[in-house]
Image 1 (cartoon, helix red, strand yellow):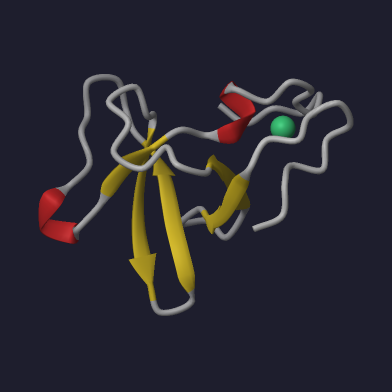
Image 2: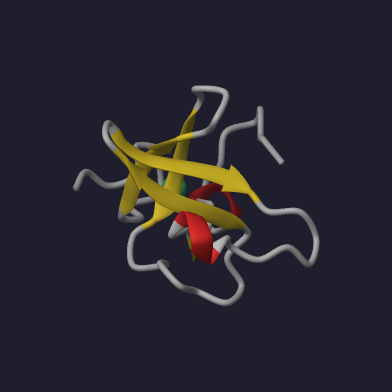
Length: 83
Ligand SMILES: [Zn+2]
């Protein structure tokens, strides 16, 4: 997997799509992290990630797991941050 392309950051990430179709970088190795603010699931075309609401947990029925959005840990996140 390619590392993060932000300058000064070489974090290992995997890419997912949001339900709206935007790209969402996820920290590699963060699957199942209790502090993860994303719910990630596998779809036919790759990974789908959605942002969890406060107190919400990944939906086991949909086989979601938690993940950490890379922008939360990136050493040099882009100015236009997504919540
Ligand atoms: Zn980064």
